[in-house]
Structures are given as structure tokens and as C-alpha cells.
Length: 126
Length: 425
Ligand code: SF4
Picture 1 (cartoon, rainbow over the protein chains, first blue to last red):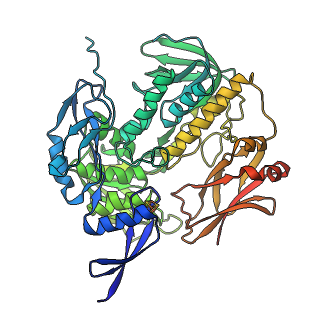
Picture 2 (picture 1 turned 180 degrees about the vertical axis):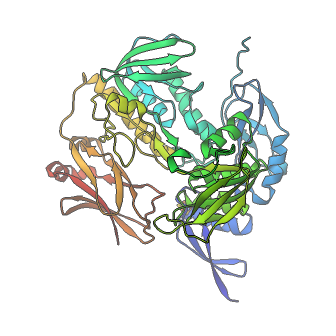
Picture 3 (picture 1 turned 90 degrees about the vertical axis):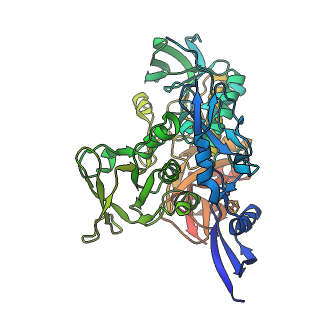
């Protein structure tokens, strides 16, 4: 079978290395450039692409109406839109602590969604 | 909270640079440390940068902006840093008397022994890039849109064109797509991407958002609201090429066309500004030309990683604390660090060779032109090569760092100046 050379840009860290992947069909023969994490990324990207996702959910009683949230691990790329729709249904109450889980086992992936920051309960002033 | 009228160190701004400076000043012996912040809560712009990618260097983790800030906010509180929030600094005198206006405290006047300027940077606006066309509603900087979407909960539009391929612009392209908007196009006047490559992949490619290089905006169309923009291809000198115009319908235009260090206060005190970086001229302790006034973070030059802003803040805070404890000693010789071939600028602008006794001194720079080949980053004293470091490439969008090694102390001490250059290998 003919081998093909594919370039994959690693998004694992800000360096953004271009890795050169030699493929025979779907099998990875060789990966050049980048570090160990980059090589893991290539395998992941070519079999089951995932991304870190950050978005927001509604929060009641804080200074602002939104609470930023993020996935505790890279999330299956094909299901990101579905995740975002699920997050639109979520509403939490103050006080919130950073890393509190706002959505457990999102879409059955085993990945939890965490609060990115604290939100204090604002004293109600009249 | 009650404010004292005298402090050891006052930090202006509570973004990553300011928080790090205040924590570090406190840890290095400064007794009373105050941060003055104009927003209602500490954290700075990180609070609206809800995407991941922060903390890779310092925490070895991929954190969202607000989490990165939260770590330092918590540490600032636990080390006893005081905060004066919702307060705008109006004036700072060279004698280090600070006047500010605060909703809660009214007109405030405080004195301090040392100051760390950490005001960060501000986005370039439409006026600064002289964008032609009508003054219709629907033209925002990317950061303003980011604040609306991520913090305040408003969508600025439905159908977007983004001018500039800076990181904030690309990140907003993804964010707006997440929130149901359509991003029609990203235009970049340069022949290369101005943000990080990873953002091109995970913010544009992932969502089939088209990036066009060497194109800019010729006209904005629309009376009350933006209805379309007219784009045009440009040559290397940014001259529009006739016949390449395209009308792109959209209701909102975002500008991600660069950041400028925010130095109104610095200028007012008499801090010398580097015309290239737009930030103060600093030595390796991040001290400005005014003794006891330090500055750190994006107010000095615009970084691409927040981790380095924190590092700079830590150094500035430590230097400020020392300056206070040493009884405000002014320093010894400052050796100029010059930008040589292919280097647009290098920070710090000067170093004190004696500081090498404590460890390496990090010099950071930006290249003029992309070099997509292996390069040497060189430190020279006159013609003599003192040290060099290999990099696989050099791109204007990615800051280059080289340490001046501690072991070079003797050579550095006998040098008249140092030159940093980037050459092909
Ligand atoms: S290959 Fe390694 S160094 Fe390069 S971007 Fe990926 S994680 Fe970063």
C-alpha cells in the first residue's frame, strides 16, 4: 500500500509544532517532529479527535450573569455542539467555587464540566 | 476595607502582572502592599478570557483564564495584599504620591515607597487603523465583544467579519460560533498569521472559518447598522490592488488589530517609553528610569503567554520590595541590550551585570520578519559571540527568549553593551 505523508499541527501547547505523519492506509507508520505529548496528540487526532471546550452557564446571585466553565479533559470534537446545547440548560446558584462540577459526566462521556472561577454571593443592596 | 495613607509598595492594576508583583513584593518583605484596580473585581482581562491555554509554563496545566487568575487572587488574599477596587488612578507624582477616585472612598490620596505599574494593554481601535467607511453601529474591538459575550451575556451580532488574525480575534471567531453566530471571514493584512498557529487550527480550521491573508477592508457599508464590508487584496506595502474587491455581507465587524501598552499614567510621571514596544524602558529588575518605579507585564511589551507576564510581575514585585528594604538605593551600572539583525526589539533594555550573581537573566524579543528555517539566537558583545541558542524557526507572532547565562558574568561585566541577533543557521 502506498504511504502518504500528512502534516498535523499539534494544539496541545502554545508552540504549535507541525508534525509530519507517515500513514499507510489508516495505520501510522512514523511521526516526525514535536515532543512525546505531540505524538500522543497525533494518534488521538487521527483516531478520535478531541478538544478542550470552554463556555459559560447562567449563574444567579453573582456580580455577572455568567459563570465561565470548562471541560476537565479534551472532549470529543464531533459532540461539541451537543455539549454546548446541554450547557445552555444549566443554571447554578452562588456561591460557586472554582472547580465545582456544574455538569457531571457530560453526555455520558465521563467528562465533567467545571466552574472556572469563584463567584461570591453579592450582598443585595437596595 | 480601610485604606492606610502610606504603603511600601502600590501596584496599579490587578491583572496577572499586578497580582504577581503584589504577591512577590509581600513575600520578599514589603509590609504594606496595595493593589489599585479600576474594575469592580480583581483579575483583569483574564476574567473574560474564558478559553483554555493558560498556565502551561507555570502550572504545567491547560487552564482557562479565570482559573489562572483565581489562583493568584487567592494567593494575594492569603499573603495579605490589600485591594482598592473600583478605583481609577488619576495621577502619580515622581515623589510617589498617588491620587485616585473611588466610588466608595471618594477622592483618595496615598503615598508609597515603590510603585509597580501593571496597567496592561489596550486594543487598537478603528480610529487608530484609519478604517474607511460609514460610522454604522456594529463595529467592535474583539476584546469588547469578548467582554460582552463571556462576562456580561450579550451577543454583539449574528453575522461576523473579523479583521486581523490576532489570537483574540481567532478565539472570538470560535466563541461566537459556539454561541450560534456565523463568522463569515477572517482577514489579515500581513502575508502571515499574527496569532498562534494552534489558534488557527482549533479556532478557525475546526469550524471551517476562512482566513484570507494579505487582504484588508476598503469600505464599511451600512447606514445605521453595518450591512457589508468591502475587502481588497493588498501588496507587500499594503497598497490595495484594484480589481480584487469583494463585498462581504455581515452585520458586525470585529477588529483584532493589535494591542498597545497602556501608559498614560507612566508618561505623566515622566517614565521613558520605548517607541517600538510602546512601553517603559526597563532594566532586568523591571525598574523604569525613575528610581522606585517598576513596571511589569503587557504594560511593558505585549506578551503572548500569560505565564511570562506572571514571571515579569514576580521579578518586578521582588525588585520593588528590595528597593524599599535597601533604603531606596539607586543602582549601579546599566549595560544596554540592543536589538541586532532581525530583532525588532528586546526587553529588558538594559541589564545590571551584578544581577547575574543571582542567576540567568532572561531577554525576550520579537523578530522583524518570519524565518521559516532553523535559526540561531545570538548574544554578542561587540563582534564577540557570547552565547547562542537554536530555534527551529522564528515568527513575529511568537516571542523568542534567550537567557543571559550566569556563567557569562565576567564577560558581561567587561562588555560595553550587548547585542541580540537572530540569524539563519
Ligand atoms: S508537539 Fe509537544 S511541544 Fe509541540 S505543540 Fe505539541 S505538545 Fe507542544
